[in-house]
Length: 285
Length: 308
Image 1 (cartoon, chains in turn cyan, purple):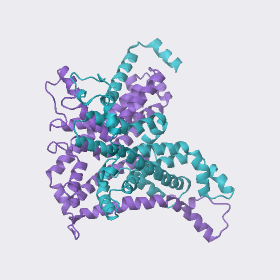
Image 2 (cartoon, each protein chain N blue to C red):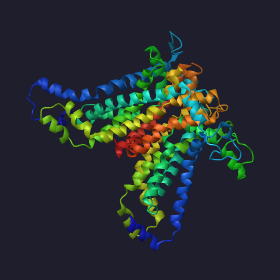
Image 3 (cartoon, rainbow over the protein chains, first blue to last red):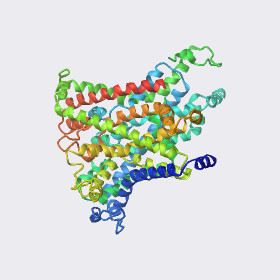
């Protein structure tokens, strides 16, 4: 890196570098300002939110917005629900995706190509198209307003990515790994769980992180397939907060900060897995 | 087509039919759980929604009768549908174009050798942040920022760009643009990440060869960078087009489709038909129309992916 930049600086003026940094600064304000505004608004009192002239930093820092969330069992419940649903969906998705991806990665079979195209196309099926029959089905099966209704329906949009991502990962692993087990008289099933899964941890983490993100953020199904406060997830909780007291901005911002926290932490600690998941939709399959 | 003939001949194959049959079944066992789930959660519901769309009073009436494509005609005669269609198209095209332009600009800025590598990795982390937030949170952040008494109006008034408190989300003149802007803010990082990866994958030799031939920076960008990135751009733009077209939570949480249908999009139009008016048959017809549009674009996406 160093020799290249020194070559440049000797021949060119400093102007392109300055322009680059100006561009980067504009980008930083564009991306970061709304987020900072949300964060600092959550630390303001509600009267200070629309203070004139507007100030990013609060005059008085207060945790009153956070306190009102943690003092309210209904709001805490939103978070518990989101963790339960996203957690279970992530586990189930991983289980099914690993098994399916192994089949895709290690075998040739009839309709493989068709099935592959089918899975890619399921990524783009509009949620609203599925919502109407899901509503009918969920009511008919008597699981309306249960965790089960959310967990089952979330699988439909977490599985396609998870399968594609896991298949992509397993394809990078040499087949000799499985063959070693088969030669020793083991079955492919043992090869999968004893040998392949332990060396697939990076792929599994990427899949898990992305699945968690998708389920954590889901809105439409949670809005329609649950009804009681006990089962509402964080996105719906924020919506309800907005409807109930439209002017408790600091509380809504605090709720948003808390609602983004698990994803922010996952992102910071598992950045490369996050990026892998992010681009999985557009990877060559 | 990979038939069974491609199966590697196993040395241990004893010639027993049962053994071979079992062997042949193995891959199907691995894909069985996902196939079952997709049948129950995808194929069956799709056939149901199509059936609903041909009925009069699906879900609501016990003895709903089949009325053919009557519901589709009703939808196509509804002026609000066409308004929602046009607004969805505007929202989607603007979002895709600006996601791409901003994503490309950020990717190029981050890819230059002029900045310190540490600065680059820090900025990359920060630039991705908007993508992490769920649509509901993006909606309320922008509702706060674009509130008539909010910071955006204060800044614009201080700079004398506007001279009154603009009601961004509650005026028919601005609501759709405000909504589109919020979506542009939230969606560019996908392009940025993918294009940055694409830029780093372009061979340095191409640029060196062009340099020897006397190409300037702009020519290098136009004749090397863009063509090299094209496959990635097409993939992401098609996916982004499909997903953006299906927007629901952002609209639902900012304007709810209003004021006076000025931000109605196909998803909110369909949702209201089903869950506010309980016209499940009409909603199903509208949902099938959205599906057909999505699948037509998906066809090009898959064709493009196969061709890569």
